[in-house]
Every structure is written in C-alpha cells, then in structure tokens.
Length: 99
Image (cartoon, rainbow, N blue to C red; front, side, top):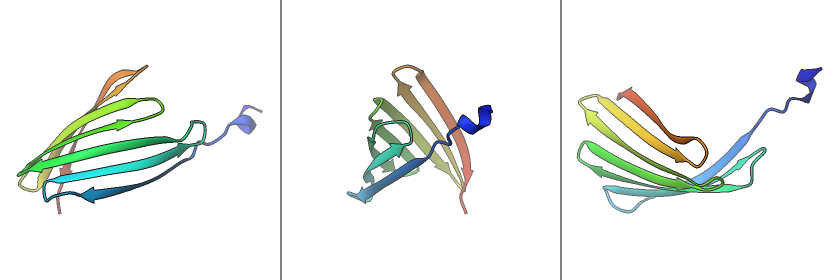
C-alpha cells in the first residue's frame, strides 16, 4: 500500500548563542534533516530600546533572512522575510503577549 512506503522526516538541530553586549546577540547552529545534507546557520540580533533587528544566513540551500520586532507595553509585533533560491521571498508576522 502507499502508506507503507512513506518516511516521516526528522530534523535534529543543535546551536549556541553568545551575548556580545547588552544589545547584540550572535548565534550559530548545525541542522541535520532526514533527506538533506548537513547544513548550518548564523544569525545576529541587535536590540535598541523596544526595537529589535535580526538577520541571518543558512546553507544547503543558501537562504537569507531579515526581520524585526517592536515591543509595545506587553505586546511584541514581529515580522520576518526569507529569501530562497527556488521559492523566492516569503514572509511571516506574529503578535505575542509578554507575561
């Protein structure tokens, strides 16, 4: 049957982040997907008051990301953009309530 040949993908990711200053955090990670070669990522986050700017790159396939967040009272509004070689530019947005 068709369901016997299906394989469930799994993803293992391990990374580290370092706070270089009260305003800057950098991080990197290694990512292993079931059907993809080992890939890596590097990211940087800069925070200025209630505004946060984020950027990063990923390998295999090469992708670039940029995003920002804005905190207002107990809410955080976030948006991000990802550039993919085959898929083009995609975006995401979210609103979080901070406890």
